[in-house]
Image (cartoon, rainbow, N blue to C red; front, side):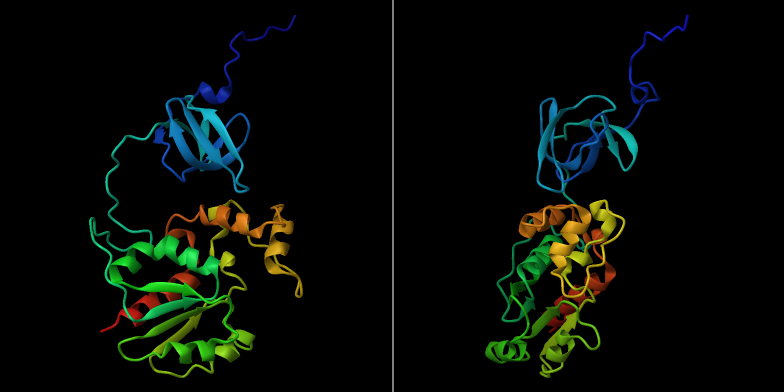
Length: 267
């Protein structure tokens, strides 16, 4: 007769001691028994609430060895109240605790759309407030030359513009070439949409899919990845929550935003 071990404890709960990790907001973990993967949005006495990339919430008990963090078994614990101040901003700059926002400069940074503006705020918001730089979105750059003329740039009111898909031969490159003021800097990244500037690894995907020409890019991406394609705004908010710092963005975007901030704030 075959004998069975009466100990029914799951294997992952029998191994050596595992690290305890504070369930800080935005920490991405996977619950071991269900495979549910999401970011921490709330941690209360005995439970943690996770949100997946589609915005679905689930509540789990804070059990020992109950979660995977980057493939390793961990025990989530409630964060200690009064966390220490960060020494760096999300952009990697030295944090200035207690610094007040500077009065807004006359200069501005324009970006193409709302998603671009929200991503810039997510990573560079602290820096921009200290420098007094306002970021505005244009809903496209087709009328960029007239927008620049209306702004009236000058040595004391420089204008920086971030353009999507600024590559040789693109429509955007032709528009950007029409802006010749020395007090305006137009730079861009190679991506069709700013979504692509978020590293796939930050989202748990292998790569951004290729969308056939003529198809709406965001819709095509959502369909290829199994994300809801009827509400790309909600999908974007889920993507944005996975961006915690400059480390989650591609260097082709990082360098261009830093370049614009330096241009607008130069003496």
